[in-house]
Amino acid sequence: MKTAFIARTALLSLLLSASVLADDDCSEPASDWQPRETLRQRVEQQYGWSVQRIKVDDGCYKLRGTDRRGNAIEARYAPASLRLRTLHVNFGDDGDARDYLVSPGAE
Image 1 (cartoon, one colour):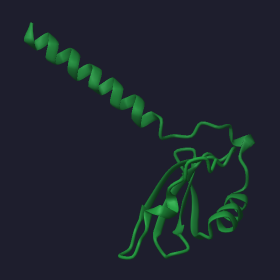
Image 2 (cartoon, rainbow, N blue to C red; image 1 turned 90 degrees about the vertical axis):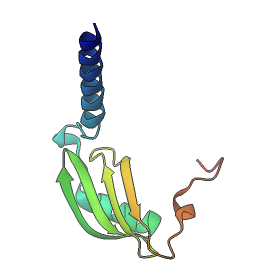
Image 3 (tube, helix red, strand yellow; image 1 turned 45 degrees about the horizontal axis):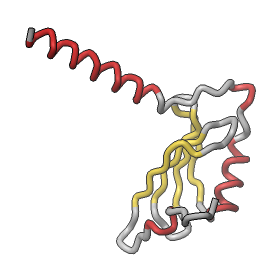
Image 4 (cartoon, rainbow, N blue to C red; image 1 turned 90 degrees about the horizontal axis):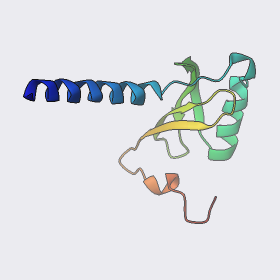
């Protein structure tokens, strides 16, 4: 009885973790993708980021660069909609997360 419970729990955990990991991939058709240069221009103009590299990773655009304060950035975008999927910021000693928080009513 206890073994069956442990087996079911392990299987459920495995299935849930697989679905979470699969969500990281982008699945938009390549024919709908926008050029990388469009993404580069957008983030440079809107956020003041300096883009070092944009590559395709798991069907998403993976952008590496720095923000206007020099903090290292890694972001993933859906290539057709250019919607931000994930953002990782490595703040330096004087980094300030307030630049990345949306104030209520701002959107």
